[in-house]
Amino acid sequence: MPAEIPVEIVKPLEPQRCMEEETVELVCELSQQSPVTWYKDGQPITESDTVKLTNEGPVQKLTIVGASLADKAEYTISAGPAKSTASLVVQGIYCGTVISYFLFSISHCVVWRVVEKPVELTSNLQDVVITQLHAVAEFRLKLSKADCKVNWLIRNAPIHEGPKYTTGLDDLQPYLKVNDITGQDEGEVMVKVDDKVSTARLLVQGDYLPANVCAQVIFGLLISVDML
Image 1 (tube, helix red, strand yellow):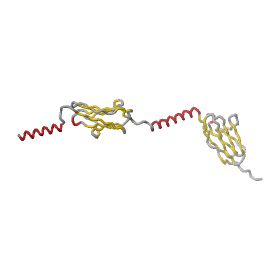
Image 2 (image 1 turned 60 degrees about the horizontal axis):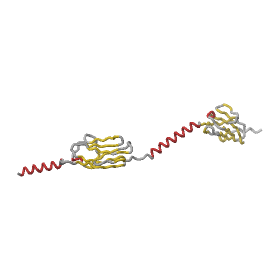
Image 3 (image 1 turned 45 degrees about the horizontal axis):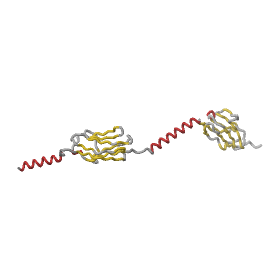
């Protein structure tokens, strides 16, 4: 009498994931038709309104209709010594909604950062006229937002914070103060805000002579006196 050929697993169970209230199938293919037993976390399974056990020749199926969170488990099919095990994960509808919303929020945040508008100059620098020596000249402009890199220049040279120059930010208004004004301070004032630029002029007016002119006059007078 020929020996009975043992049953083997041709296509094992695969892990499954579904949403709560969905229908899910666990499928296993054997080498031949054979009686089988299904287990849930090691306990035998019997058919019910929500659990269906079917076979199509060597193909065995376990179908769960309207899965619930309680169906999350490890399922095993046994055909004699041949066995196969796979896990079923059931995700709650509310949990899925929260996760989906969370992922959407992250995506929305990333997109928002990518399309964030650049800074705009809502008001530009204005020329400042000083008529009194040793006064203070102040330049201001207004921005559309505060998180920007601001650089000040006078006659195309970057200024250095100190007794002569004071910079700061008042609400959305960066400002530059030029202290102890003399005739040497005249020139173009420029501010660079990210890729935006605004310029103005500092003008010093009054009945005085700049230092270099005074030196020339005094030197000329000394020469004239010596020649007498």
